[in-house]
Length: 111
Length: 114
Image (spheres, rainbow over the protein chains, first blue to last red):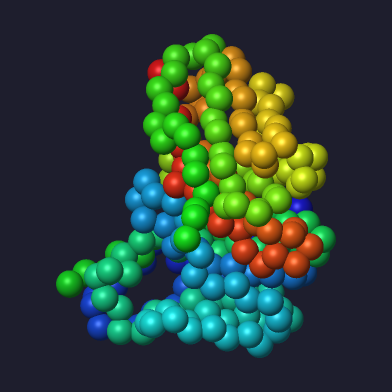
């Protein structure tokens, strides 16, 4: 059974600081996704990582993938209040399109 | 750009009642997925359809059924509702499940069972 774990589950940080969210998965997968979710809202796609060593950046967010370690990271640079949300990673198996989500990280940026 | 449409957005039902959730995928998308997200939980895959045929099944209760119609919209039918069915239900769509990298999520239907 594929398991996806994130840490930390909760993260409270000050504006302007840097931090990293970690996503570990138990079995080899072919794609890793990062989503953002505001309370009661839908899931917004942030990044899709397809291969070992992949790195993608958008604004203050940067995601990377290490398939050998089965680890992805979401790095936040100089956090701003607008980044407060819950962040989920999700993976798919080869030939199987359903998303298996991580536990989520609730990020709160304090002014 | 057109997005995934879900209706209704909010639904309140009593225990043992039935509910029908509808999903209209992005035009030309041929695959639809349903996910359930309980309060404070991560989304859980329920079921998916490709070209109107069920393609995968997850942790969907026997009380639930779903189908995809000829116009590619999908409906999730839920019977004998229980308090634990209260959740956000998301529909997502994608184009060509073999090469598509992304599932685009709808706004969700919030189901409350009282």
